Amino acid sequence: MRPSREFSKQIGEDTNFLRGKSFLLEVDPSSRYETVVGEFADELSKNDCSVFMFTYKSSPIYKLLSTDHSLHFFLSTAAVSYPKQTDQQNEVLVPQNDSAIYLDLISKTADSSKGGCVVFIFDSVSDMLVTSGFEATYKFLKSANEVLAAVNVTSLFISTSGIHDTKVVATIRSLFPNHLVGGPDGSVKLTRKS
Image (tube, rainbow, N blue to C red; front, side, top):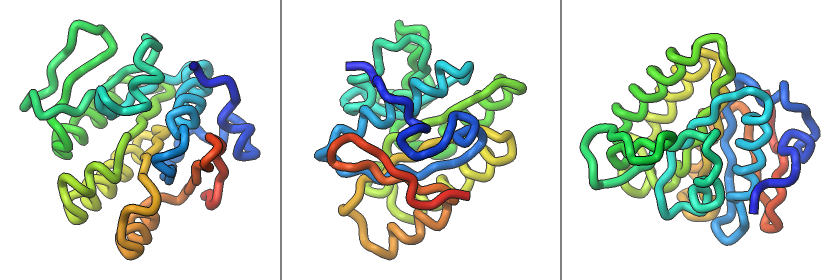
């Protein structure tokens, strides 16, 4: 089922509030968080933004949104060692959690879209923490936020709540001026904004 609610209205803002900001969305994995992400992508896509998602084929987000050909997917997999176009025009396979390649793709994609509205969605910070470790994930998030802020791009980073050490969570949160929390019912609320 496609998203039906406007994301910005759920957090008491309008679409312009979302533009050029970096958000951390903390979600409960048992909730339908993919609906919230879909609403975010849908609203910005309908407002002339190009939306790029770093995700994987078994993700609930990909399962919900893969038929929307206006969205672009960077699909994380262990099957490739460099970015590789799939038979779908809007899908590129990328090496699993390779932060150097991710940063290169972010930079090149943002540069090629100069003057336009660009959105990046990252699913999932938690997977990267588990597979790459805290230090590598922290460095990636810090670098990604610096690159994205320099080109005024909108970004949404998704993290699973309740599975990480409180010190790790606090450190990751410190990288994001805007915090969102997904509710168990598929709702979302803004808990801190810049």
